[in-house]
Length: 154
Image 1 (cartoon, rainbow, N blue to C red):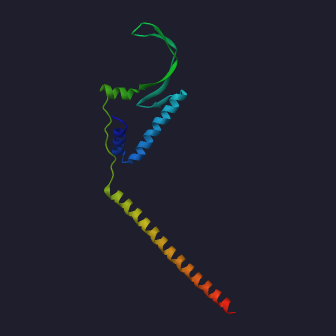
Image 2: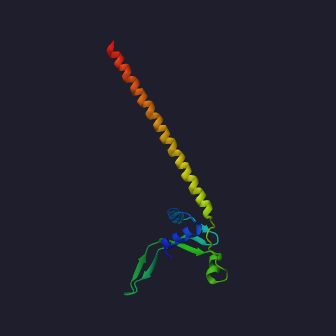
């Protein structure tokens, strides 16, 4: 399973927008990487623990020539599966069932119709406001023209 397949599976299971699921997964990965880089442990109960492991400098051997090669000290990520994860993989425990979130079509339709009604009311109010402001501005323009004409006749 790759990232896209995981995002699709989570989206179907939770009924959250695909882009939101991708953002959350990306954030989880980034925060885990940053924390492990700092040397912190990231423990997800029932899943596992991410840690940083420091490896010392050592001398290795070139397999072709047998010559000694110096290997620098390094830091590597380490993942240890949690007991619940180990039990599921080993078959000692049953895997959690992935049941999709129950949603009713009526609820989503009601939300959509409410949203449409709100938008409709808002657009109607905007049109009415623009009409009244247009009427006011045309009345002001007519009034200023008559004042200008009356001023010229004097």
